[in-house]
Length: 170
Image (cartoon, rainbow, N blue to C red; front, side, top):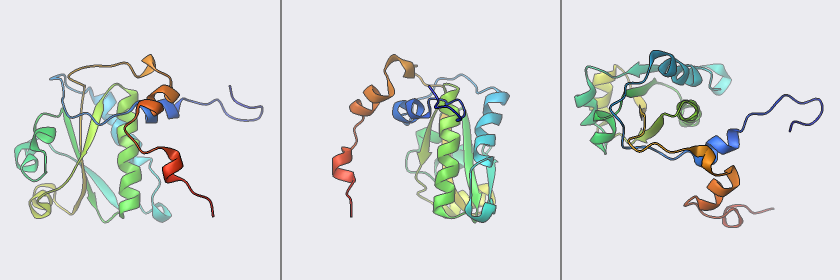
């Protein structure tokens, strides 16, 4: 329940706590409106001084070549949507952009995975510029329901270090 004078809230924490990288995709295509929201979430990301030094390359015909340029080719070759973030954006900006896209996808039941680039020169040749991030998206091969647990339950089950190991005061 929002406090008086605040805007209504959405349960972003549930989305964050329940999201897991998905690497096994169903053969179901992603509708254009869902793909559009994913891309728009990237566009809406903050960037240093709002420079937006990126473009989003949808990899379709060159999918096999790009798959060969990442560490886990099946993530790219089996995805319904592959987006390469290309340009001069810094790492922090690219991370914000990628996370926005992945959370927007999760909101529509689409799983995603960032892909490590094994061959940056090949990826750049395919995508027409320096590739900062390759994201693969698809409907999950084994669907789940993020609302089957609370955000706190998802958090407790996460394979992550506990906060008391990560937070210190000075």
